Image (cartoon, rainbow, N blue to C red):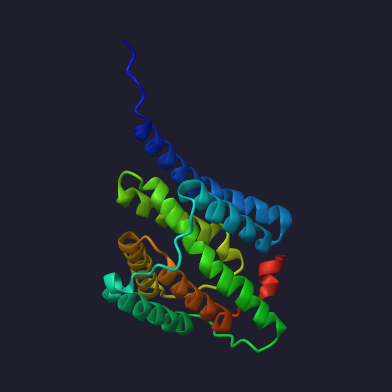
Length: 220
């Protein structure tokens, strides 16, 4: 007599495979798309929609926003924003600071990169976290971490200036910021705080890191 397939276990495996597939394949696909189109914004929109919104709706039929449950994670929120501002300080210390001028380019940068990426990039991260970590959360965190590193080197590194020189403390703070964000999500199943923190951090890149919408729309 043949053993019947357990649909629950099968569903878990499918989610895990999908999570790891996105982890390794999408950063490579993003790199290739950017080299073909020379338009990071096109890649980012695909990134936000396919790996963010559509993937989330396929999984849960809803988006994890607007239920922050701050009382559950008060300490974590304080730590997260404290580390965020420490990272901002270190970014300015180790990088060539370029103060943004208030103009049309700045406004578009704030809307397209700061707000939209701040809202949807954490969604992609937690999608990977939930999928790859469907059975063991540590696997989900590991997948999200690997994905973030790959996207940094294959995509974001082409269009954003990152600190030079001795970056050990900056990297450590980035790691703490990343971990705390996922702790908050694991406790609340909501990324409102996560997204607000990312918007603030992205805003710092725009205001002091010399990031402009022109580099997001087209690369040489």
